[in-house]
Length: 454
Image 1 (cartoon, rainbow, N blue to C red):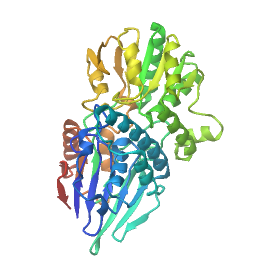
Image 2: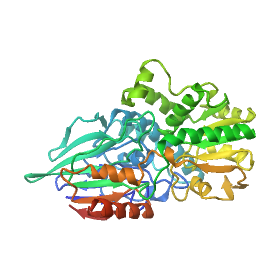
Image 3: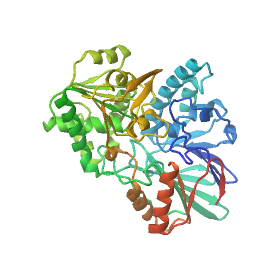
Image 4: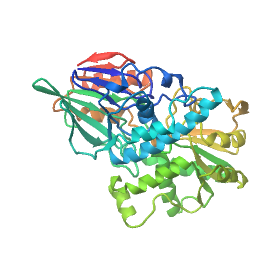
């Protein structure tokens, strides 16, 4: 049996792992490579396998770096099933349709053919086959799947694969993206009892987050600072999980009167649609959030909140005098409506940009987080005079201690080998050092397109 990694090797985007059992070929995830723009050249490269020969895809969750190339896979001949949780199916539809729109816009600007079109999204959606957590399912004569809750975003899953090789079975566990408990809304990450091989993400493999309990207070501080200065607080957000968490905590801060009533704008049609999917699947919430939703408490609604779907509504935000709070995409500021707000407000020292999401190398968000003094926005230069701050505790990815704790629980049997992927080189190396020193497990940091025999 062979594993090969065709993305998320030495980087955090483009997750795509091929498993060839000798009888069956299938993928775990099929995500977009993301950088300063959506039409990243790596997305256009030829596959190192035949899409038509792929029997099925196991999709761990709905972030674009895990599901975003599925429509291209379909366009290039894939006709197998896509297995995921029900919530992932609905969220993936939103993400892929949004990606198709952005890809089309960028391709037109560059005079290129789009990576895929909307019809490809609908084509692959017809192949989705939802499976809930803890429902074992036989996917092929030699492959069985069981999903566990990863606690990362709504519907995110750890994939436990049991693969028959002759008279024996090998258990391979894919962590997907592991969550950062305790977090509002989603349940805590589940543990796996045992595995022969593990593929683990390393997004924050070299980091220790601030305590999760501090994030609401740090958000409160940023709001009070901005209100006190009469400024604009801009928070770039991913549409999935981060938006819902921030709304949840703004709701709590408002209900407990820890922040004054201030105009708050959720300026993202995708995030608004994602909130509605969250409400549909509140049975997936943690116990406290589930009970509040069942009693009629809308966790995502608060005084002063305005949802802006249309471009015209977004432009109206500029007419509202500060102080105000703007929540908008994209999370890495590599597109979306946040770009337009930065053009208006980044050069004013009264304003603040609060970064609470992971920022990949090459993105505008990463440059700002790292202290850029000036930035280019749609062909024009802007001086960065606004305060730029960051909160790591909002990350929906586990940090090194939590990754090691999750891996330590896999003890009956202990893994023969741990593959480390989905991380920039430094993060993967630091996680590898931790695994070797504290768990004494054999590791392999994966290389792109390299096949590993197991």
